[in-house]
Amino acid sequence: MSADTHASILIVEDEESIATVVAHRLSRSGYRSDWAPTGELGLQKARATPFDLILLDIHLPGISGFDVLETLRKEGLRTPVFIVSADRFVDDRVKGLRLGADDYLVKPFDFDELMARIEAILRRSAAPRPPQVKVGDVSINVEEQKATRAGRSLEMSNIEFRLLEFLARNKNQAVSRAEIAKEIWGHENYKETNVIDVYMGYLRSALDGGQKQKMIFDTFDGGFVLKG
Ligand code: CA
Image (cartoon, rainbow, N blue to C red; front, side, top):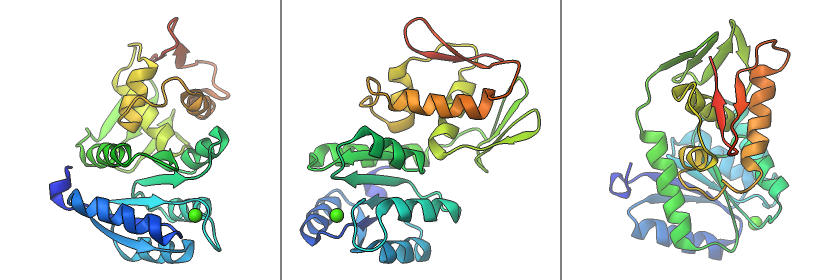
């Protein structure tokens, strides 16, 4: 998806000056946007309107951005969520991504980078993907975002699911950290951080936990391979 398709973006941000600048910049790039100054309003608007993307601040009066994200995902809303927060700690970034955010940017951010990442998320969510992938006893239903191993359903977040899907499409081939970062987030910013390791850890416990036959293996150069 490109900007000229007029994607609509919900900005959940309590600082009006930031929201105004972001809205202006989005509009210049051809996006429509709406603004919610609190988490409660963000939830209401996200439920009422099918936005293409939600830009979400973490520190909000009342319920936090984390709460907003967790609630929306529990309710089954799969709209891409991009966290823009003052938090500098990787733990917060991991927490946000773990709760089902699609990307995370720390304030103060560069507008060009923000726009590039928004475009990457929208492109990715609009790209057609084959509906089913099978590797060994693992079955992946892309449309319903559900995966099973030997008929047992696997519990995982958005990002872990995409990671599994990517590894499965490249089964028995090594994938590098840069390829993973590019596929999952549309940029390579996370390839040298522990974010990929954290996700791979979650995915491993969901997929291989308690199983005799492991499926995910490390490669010599720090990449991964799904065997099956
Ligand atoms: Ca704030």
